[in-house]
Image (cartoon, rainbow, N blue to C red; front, side):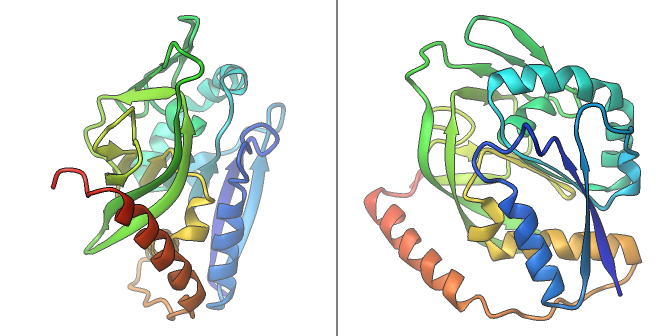
Length: 253
């Protein structure tokens, strides 16, 4: 049986908005097609993982205090993580994890939380704690040859700058910073985003993009995924898209 091996980083600290649901969705969609998902977890104090030995690395959202603690632990694996990214291991990074993979995060008090510097963006917290990018968000995203709308929920005070390859164009909501036209960071084997929801539960096409990428990379063959019945998900998505995009003109138009 073909399988995908996933490393779940800091499940005890980066689980702010139920982001573990992303793993549950991957597991469900793999098993429905006769594939298996193996999940290893890493927390502070555990044996050092070899990031290059996994097919997917996943990390969810966390508050500033957690990020400060985790930054000191994660930096020990900086070179191994960079090697894994370069070798094509898929990284799914949500909110706080997204920020940690950049150059740094500057907190409300001006404190600097060093990032892994895997990517060139950086994040600065909004000085007014009452001001946050919060609410529903819709993106237009291109995944390979396919274009789709991605739905999620954002809740972040951090404003992320210097993104050279965004995950998507903002159709509704904020994005990387207040009133932005772009959200997240993307490359073939990296999705870094502020979108909770969980992201994959609301967006089956994103799930299948990740699954296809990981299986084809691992087994070095073209794999046509069996089509699943996503009629319920698509019905929900249609209602949400009509609600959100009907309230506001598309940005840039």
